[in-house]
Amino acid sequence: MMNSMKIKNIFGLDITSKEGSTVLESALSNGVCFEYSCKTGLCGVCKTTLLEGTVKEVKKQLALTEADCNKGKFLTCCCEQETDILISAENLVELNDITIK
Image (cartoon, rainbow, N blue to C red; front, side, top):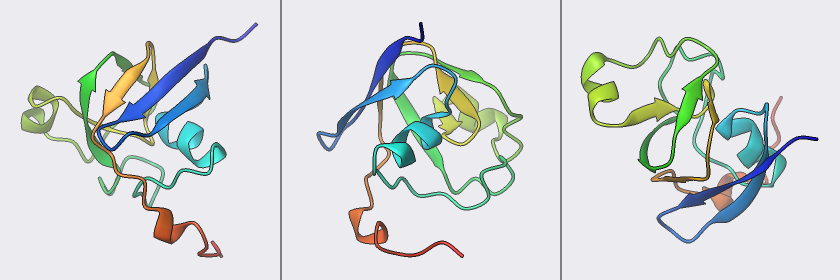
């Protein structure tokens, strides 16, 4: 049985995720739109700050610098959470109605 974990942000968001999904995949499957573009770790658009909890890299975070890592930054498209987490990513609700082509 897969574990459920919480993703919270500093703006009051509180969603449940499933083990085996990236933070971005979990957000999108819950109707939450964090900023993103490539979903491959190359562009860095989904970079956010991990304030509490732990994540693990499942895809190489090519867009992150060593300085980013030292500041607690990670790419939501490349990492799965290992615990409940608190992040600084904002839910961009205004993007929810845009059709992806």
